[in-house]
Length: 112
Length: 111
Image (cartoon, rainbow over all chains, first blue to last red; front, top):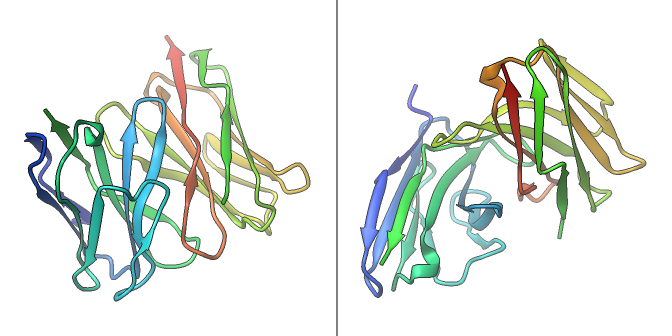
């Protein structure tokens, strides 16, 4: 059972470069999320998609865009990477309203 | 929006003792409260959750208690083992799908 799969696992970018983080889930979940995790800051929500066809901003959306490609896939794009975006990024999915969320393995991104 | 706080930030316990982590939340409409365990370099994993219509839930050595009046919920780990050493995150949400996480508690079990 794959669950939530993220790619890539590690990435180094130069300031100003762009990239897309991919996330796919095979649990037929309606809702998907992108979080970033920084030391001492917990998990902060960047964007989420409550259902296919909808996306909404979370706590820290600036500098990011998302696409809910279909029910399975939710991508996160950095158009012009900045050192402040160095972080570990987690994708998660859940069946629906206020239900159990399952996380991907994370992407460690370094922007130099 | 919802604000979730965890105390203490770091907790050290002797192996075999109990550990208790408390979370407070701000939105009285929150109705779902999960706890996640994150080992170093790994993803957060759900270990137990509780809904607002239940006061306590147990699963082997772990339990969660909820006090809606005081707006806090706690994770209890009994007979701690070295593999319980990790960062534990609490979260709270209501009907809009947005889980708000606390900043995490580091639990260290001393053999």
